[in-house]
Length: 470
Image: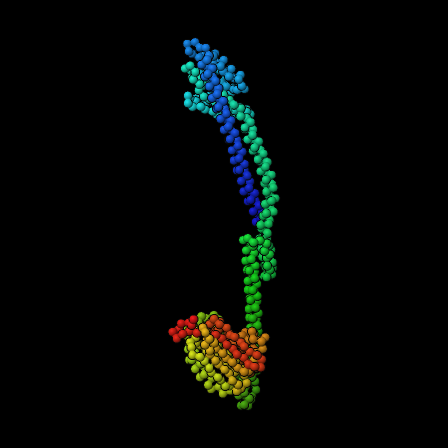
């Protein structure tokens, strides 16, 4: 069952219950008020009749000061003729002395009535309803019961008519309420229908579909949240698609990088196996096999380092920049093909020492590969406020702007032939980027074709006691 129909059904049920209870209460209240008025009038009329009876009895001629039955009958006949009344008079034992011809009341009230106790009841005779009253009259030492009957059929008829009219009104109200609430329920659930339509569109693959906001209430806020979720879902799907494409490109590049050295290794190995070569050619073939094997080994180690860096947790510690630069200087002091300029401010950085050395050595190696022999490679460390910035600058061929976002991807090389000639596989910068992510920073590339490249990154600076700079 649809939510709008549930809302309509429950509303009509509550409306019917409310109308039924209120109608019953209203008609019953009017009836009870009318009955209280009629009962009060009946009791007042009985008191007047009792007073008239007692007055007439005192003025009636008596013998031996005893009120005779025929005198009582005569007084009662006169009281009955004075109006359209139904009355009955009984003696002390409950025997009827006088009664109207149409008086059909019962004797229940006689046993409940006393000198100071007046009673009444409502009785039904056929289709008629009466209020029967009973009170005692004391005349000349005789205790008599005076009973009257007052017709209240009209009050009961008004109650029946009230219930009939209210039932008709309630039916009309329910019918009109059904149509009105159907429209209201449809209007209130419109945002839900729009959200349902949006979910179906998203299920069909339209992840960027936005539901239309038609209200400013909680459902409107739900629509905004849904659209925000759809936007985030689309971004996640796009990111997953990019990652999937990157993985496919990675596998393709990896296969390509394996194919070239393996083809050469297999070819030279087959030449050594199937031909008798002189000593020089045999040495060249074995040397080529060794060189390509070392390149495959270096590539596998770089891939392993990337995987370990991505999934491993590193503990950062305070590292002396001076000790770091001293290590790098010693590593490249025997490099005769390039000229190095070392410059750094004293300080401490928060890092993992071995990983930080790996980043700087990869950047220096890339700078050497991108430069002509004899060029200058500048390695600089500079204290900047809360951070410490490292720079590796070369004056080589540079990197085009459209390539700068791609070079940190595995196996991506700007000049593939030049990189392979220097045993490059396009993994160094990818490894640097993964290591720097662990340190909460990223690699910044500032380069221009033909004018060289400057690669830099910033680490958190700490004091000598290991406290971070503020």
